[in-house]
Amino acid sequence: TLPVQRQLLGHPMGLYVCFFTEMWERFAFYGLKALLFLYLTKHHLFSDDDGYILLGTYAGLAYALPVVGGLLADKYLGMRKAVTFGGALMAVGMLGMAYRGHAATPEMGFDNVAVQIMYLSLALVAVGVGFLKPNISTIVGRLYQDNDPRRDSAFTIFYMGINMGAFISSLFVGWVGIEYGWEYGFGSAGIGLILGWLVFVTQTKHLQGQAEPGRPELLDEKRFGIRRETLIYIGALIGVIVVQQILQTRFDFGALAAVLGLAEGTEITATEVVAILMTIALLIWWFKFIFVECSKVERANMIVLMVLIGISAVFWGLYEQTYGTWLAFSDRVMNSYTFNLLVSDFTPNASQLTSVGALFIFALAIPFAWLWPVLDKKGWNPSAPAKFGFGLLFAGLAHFVLQYAALNPEANGLAGFWWFILAYLVLEIGEMVLSPIGLSAVTTLSVSRVVSLMMGVWFLASAFGEMLAGRFGTLASMPAGTDTGTALAIYADVFAILGWVGVGCAIFMFALTPLLNKQIH
Ligand code: GLN
Image (cartoon, rainbow, N blue to C red; front, side):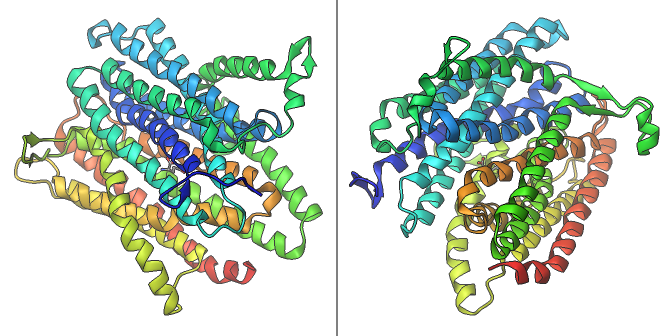
């Protein structure tokens, strides 16, 4: 049982500590993401191809490493130490990005030292996220007894923190980064992160000891004459260097390409190799687990969960276009729009427009919180697999909206602003019927003793989504200076393909739904 805790608005204080820590962590993560593609292609003179691939591999690693960070915290570190360490790594990485921005100008061209500092900074952020993100979420769950009815609302509040961070950072970091210089954008994202880190380290008393290492004696054990805890940190720092290399390594398929039916010169990124190896390892564990250690009912639930997690990768592959092709589209071939606000006019730039996603999450949270119980009463509440089908359907439809916008430009030849906003609305409806449902499906369908690991697997699917998004993005690559008409035609083609990917997977999911529903217990 948990000790009696100080409460605020009906929830333990610890929830608010997690809320603000994660809010600022996402502030940094999404601030960086809102600038990254433009920074790479405009400032570092990356080609579109290289920009999309790096965006995908970096963000992919940031979602794959939580599997490792979660395991290390479960086994040794405990959540508090993992979050503290992860936050520190991220802060150094963000400041490294800021330094990098300062050191170069587009006129300098491709500067290898500067680019290496950038890779190192991205590696620090990705490893930092791996230590921080899964563990801050686990702490939230630990603040409540298993049967506490406030648990769902706690996670809803926490998800709001995530989106609040994403929203304010796109607006603020996007503005600072584009108006005043990349270095100030990344720097301000880093300052936000440091604020969140300070909140966390000074307020750990509110976590009620729930985030402490399970077996502290293991941390003190010596290996090679060094404390195990120190060894873990050293290992992580070596991991940063490894990740720095992984981010920029690609393998040529060589002669194998023909065998696999691929074009000559096709490359696979080291990140993709890592993700595939992690997946193979996890699948081996998972098959063994469900066939050896699970009852029939548990096995059926675990299989449904795995199908949902697998298909979520496609959803994220479409969803994450927002930081790639959508960002490029709005920057290059779309009309901007000026809002006449009371105090001054406001014309959001492309990076700032990524905030629209989080804005719609807020707007949709209340209608959806209302919708599910209403549907439930009528017996119309779709099952989790059906909701996933709808999620993919909306993600696909959003791309058809953009295709329409690209095919029907306004009088000045640029695509219309409001179509873009509509596409975001449709996409976010998709997120609302898929993402929170997925998180809750992990906690209900998973066998409880492996729920943390399954949460890691859920994020690993996001990692695949990010990498897939990068690959999808390269379909829309174009040389710098491509004229607007040609660019619009390319975007229209690519958005149509992505639209069909979403609709196709939705149909697949709907067809599978009756079968999956029969398995859920
Ligand atoms: N937007 C959510 C977050 O940042 C979920 C992202 C994901 O799972 N891909 O935490």
